[in-house]
Structure formats: C-alpha cells, structure tokens
Image (cartoon, rainbow, N blue to C red; front, side):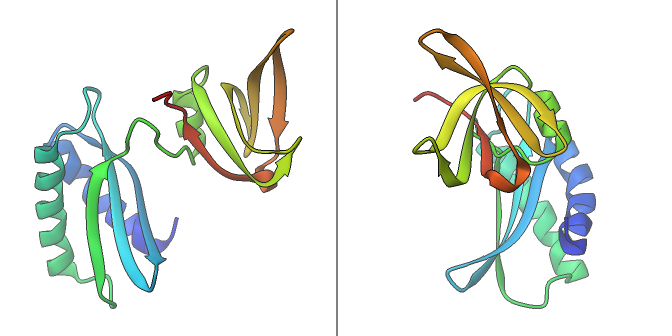
Length: 155
C-alpha cells in the first residue's frame, strides 16, 4: 500500500466505523487520464447508499482539511461488492472454502479465468479445488501468474 492510501485508510477506518462499516480497501489509481481515490466499505448486512454517502461526506471533509493529494481527483465511496477483489492474506483467510474466480495474465490450458473453491492460500499462491467430471482436483496458481482474484458470484 502506498503512503497515501495508508493515510487515507487510517482516516477512513473510524469514519466508516461510525456508520457500522469497515474499510475493505482503498486505492488511488489513474484511469483514462484521470485520478480516482476509491474507498470500498463493507458491512455484514450489506452496504447502503446512505452509508456510502455518509462516509463520502466525512472523508471528503477530512481530505479538504488535510489536502494530501496535489492533483485533481475524483473521490468514490462504494460497497466492496459481492464479487470483491481479494488482495491481502486476511481476505483469503476470510473466504477460505468459498467460490472464487482467478484471472491469469497468460492462459493455462487455453483458459485465462478459472473458477473453483478456494482451498489454500500460500504467500500469494492460490490453490483452487476445480470441479471435473471425475471429481474436484486441486489447481495451484503462483503469484506471478495471477492478474486478479475475486469472489465468484453466479448471476
């Protein structure tokens, strides 16, 4: 995490807690020439628009007072989502045994996306239990192969 996102996370945690929420992730990214500060919040019963709005207003006030970002940016506060990205070891521990999607940089067996049950997480490597005709088989993906890991939601 960058110093900026660490600082914003430290400020956002108590603000989100006032709404009964936790901070899932904070990211500061440049997309299509514009900067975005994104704060993803979570709540056991799901995040409401009112909670997002309250956190957004409070963190916006803090950002105005402290002015930690020199360039122009857009602040976005939203739910981490049902298909949230898993990044930290604690994320993987929280969702062990759940269905996830692993997207790869390069295809393996002609597939760039693998879906299965999270069976193991080991220092960045992910092991999925993948259903096959003959039963589930473990498939290990090393950290350098993985572009993104998300919870899988069958819509």
